Length: 93
Image 1 (cartoon, rainbow, N blue to C red):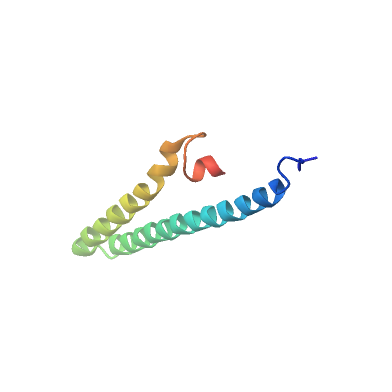
Image 2 (image 1 turned 120 degrees about the horizontal axis):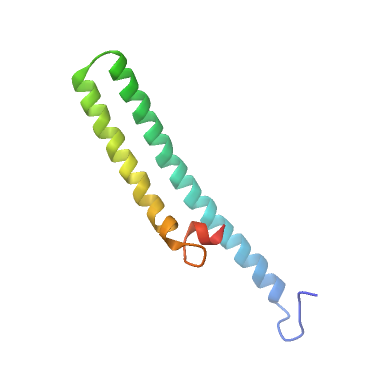
């Protein structure tokens, strides 16, 4: 049995921790997905400018793609470098 006499509130603590961690993880995933969506939209805009052969549009779109890409990479770095035992999304999943 999970609950011992020495820690009668063990299950309550585990459930509370699970819910709190789950909420944090879902929040992190949502932020990363929003960033990925921005990259996708910037890439679509860049593709459209390429089809229109708009040099200025391509340059501006490319800047947006680059900036959005680096923003997403920055958001992912703490999770990727944490590894299986460190803090962050990868450790919690």
